[in-house]
Image 1: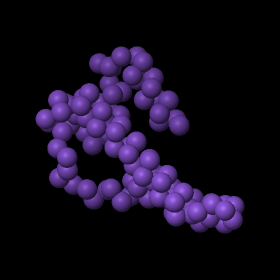
Image 2: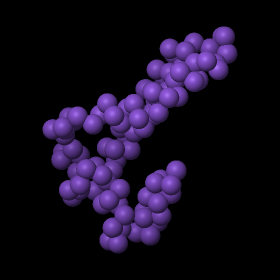
Image 3: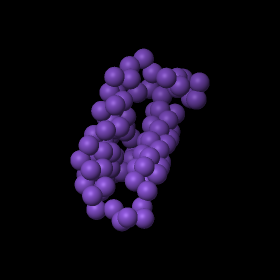
Amino acid sequence: EMDATPPVGEDASQLLGVMVFCFSSATLVPSWYNEKGSGVDGNVSVWSATFAMTTLYTLIGILGAWAYPQIVSDNVLNTMSTPKTDFVTRSCVLIFLLG
């Protein structure tokens, strides 16, 4: 149901937290910057990795919204781990949560 997926949601208050803490930018970038080689451009590396992961997270979120249009929770994993879903789907959710 692509029409049921709005491009912008009603509440984006948690977006910054997801960006900073899920990517561990607050602790990872300063440590990595001290260890990187002299020929490595820090800005290009950090921003290209952030852009790639943001794109991947967005794609996974959109595919999840299209696959489960009846989601009533903020967390798609709650919907995917119900007994109504396949064993393979529930196993993938478990592996994702452990990773």
